[in-house]
Length: 486
Image 1 (cartoon, rainbow, N blue to C red):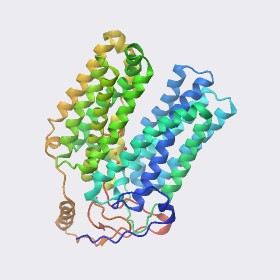
Image 2: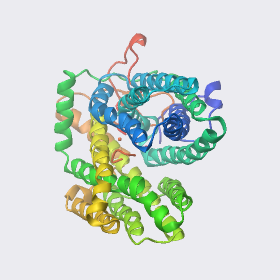
Image 3: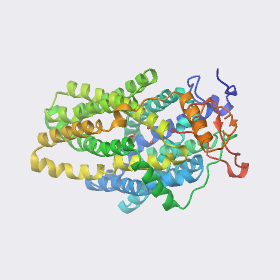
Image 4: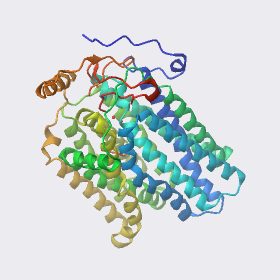
């Protein structure tokens, strides 16, 4: 029988948000709604930024430079962002990152609307946006599932991903239409406003009764500790290494080879757009499926689904006609959601809360670190081996690295632990150390809390053993002793 306090009535702000499942707390609703708004604006802004460069005299190379200016600081600052999020209250890091993105996008919009943006100015503002994301992502992934009880953790992340996937599809479609109607400058301004609204929603999180995390040593010591934690878990570093290859191959296929195959064999960009839309629909279906299916062997189920991510490269290598390609992309969309929910649920179960954001940062860095290299080498690989051979090679790489991960025992055998088992294990550890288990402190508005894609793609006792909460002037991390989730 649950001992959690009854969920308080929703505030006037919360009543304005979309209706969520009964198990979703007010904080979960706020976080999910903020993420939806941000993602909706950002995917439109990606299109707007590219057209802003082209409309002011830039070429494809200039578009690439602006995109790279955003990616490079994201890679450089991810680890620092993860360490900072484990030292400071994560909601504060998220709000600060949102405000940085708001200001950079607003400045970008002003430059474009004024009609005189220079390439270096657009690159600088894009770099500020990437820096904000580097600090935001690890903090966000370390926080989401603290807002739902452990038995609903998989459903919580599935709902969150379902919301995000809907925003991705809608944002891209709406952004393209808005660029055509009102111009890229105004779309960038809308994105800046979306970041401001999201920051406001995250500032409304209920922080009462949340415990304080113990402060560690220096930032460098925290990074080193996170590295040792990653190496100590073979299941973690092996899957992150796997996805450094998988994400790189998929990125090269989708951003370089896909448009070329569509141009040369499928009749133009429309069939490729249809295929990408099918992938988006697949992600929605996968998220809905994972709301109902909770596999006992999380990593095994997730890893087996990754084999299907080789299919898009193979389909482009043939190439399949447009309808067949769309079917393959749909299946791969379902598969990536199956893996994503299984992966984040496993991390939430296995990673200590106080180290979660650092681990999430290593996850993100490993997953996206090879993407710039892969996209840069896609052209030379086509020249050296031919497009079809390069695509077949990518498909084989995905199969090989995924098969290799299955040799890691934890990947095959790790099982989903019931909430009661984790709670009992925590009390046993405290008794073994000769310390009395601290009194459980209920978390208002959160039924239960136990206590990052792989990166490129966020608990369950009915109360949280906790030290004394921080003072009101130094609000604590709203995750408490939770583990985690995009």
